[in-house]
Length: 334
Image 1 (cartoon, rainbow, N blue to C red):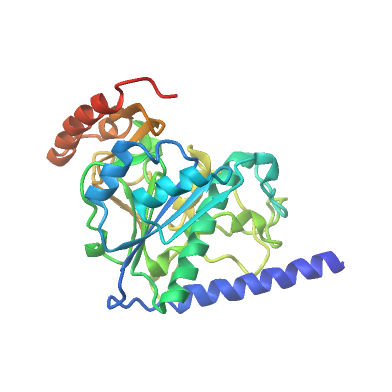
Image 2: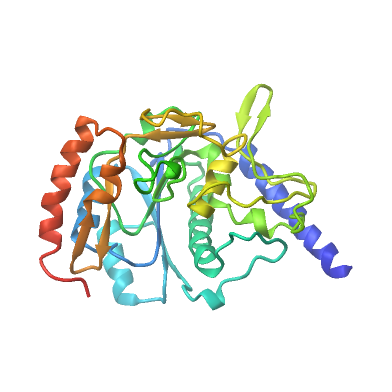
């Protein structure tokens, strides 16, 4: 009984923090940097030439960078990351799945365990670092942009000019399958008041109110508040987490938290820049760099060719990608 009461006290404290985070955001563009960029994941190709050059070319110079690397602390790597990205915050977290905390209060059949959990731990750590930076500077950021450590942008991302009523992901999905639309976790862009449900995705399974029997009402979707769609807020009563309604599994919960039912099947397949709930697909040509610091390959057809029809900007980006890939793959990755 005491254990449960202690957990409930922790939950109420977390809910208070969540409510403060959700309601106290007042964006002020007079702050030095309006954009917080978070880079998370395994080291992968973070220090490769394509990754560094694309970041310098296509990410605004007026941004504060926060980096969380899943792996052991490494002074040499830290120095290189500092030189390449000049982060205001850099941290390493354990990439050992056995050291990752397990879901304490809930479970679902599709939950993939330590690997997913470690990845979203890093994403949450990065968000916590952003919140600390905002406290130090005395102003919230206007936007947060999250990318993986192997994501190579192929053109500028004018995020500060986008509509602040939506969160944004790349169009075309994570692969060529139509069902992957609206579930891309390679890149994520959010106006500051809408960011928390993404970066705290794990709270759905960690809450002491999550009913692992699945009998409680589903509590993962967005809701209408005064005729306005608002992203999911962790319920204050018992709730259940349903299995994902389509692959790619845990990415579906991102869509769920920003839509009424997690179902975008009514969106025409051929439509680009489509909207489902609060999730806005947008033309953001990018590729993944498979390799390491020294060499590898840019997977140019992984995302760019997944588009139903290639707009001119994407066709041009694809051509540029092939050229960059040839330079990057001069030797086999180690």
